[in-house]
Image (cartoon, rainbow, N blue to C red; front, side, top):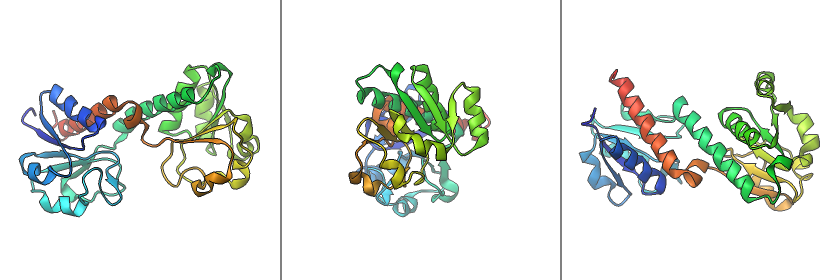
Length: 267
């Protein structure tokens, strides 16, 4: 296992932390960017791509397309990638975006969301009312963080099972129809659902009193192209782990990749 060598693509704090974690575990690991990727690639058996893995059609921070990278790969090299819907690397590709990683990532996302709330309020958080839209991994982690910090928290979901889970955690729950009527009553609204679930009529009810935090990826919880028409406070909060906790985010990537390699080798 210690013979494994890793080339970590990217030079931001998160990917530097990924390399550092691998080095701390005793592995040979280096970081590279687009300028040095092609020269360094042949000397490493494991390639770790960043999150987001793609930006504007190329691998983030490199200017190199997936097809160009595939052309450079040898048969014995593995590519560990993040948030791609499909595996473009064939037998060489393995996604570290698995359940273990996503659970760890959701915890960091929740911490980031809490920091945004604290940065955007001048009130005691015990007096705040928050609505969290969606109760998946991130929704659950965010609710737990809000609740533990004294924020009155309501889960908004269409799913009766999710509502029951929320109530088991002593959280309030409501469905979207009721929420849309009372949206302006919440000081903080955190959306985790990557769909346009909120209508123009609902968004027009919000004012400067309301802080809307968009955790979800595109197309977001409402039509963001109409943001200038509204009067509420808005924070686009994608990729919070890399923004607020890059050291832990990078370590999570490294740890997940090592877990995957160990599983493949039955260690």
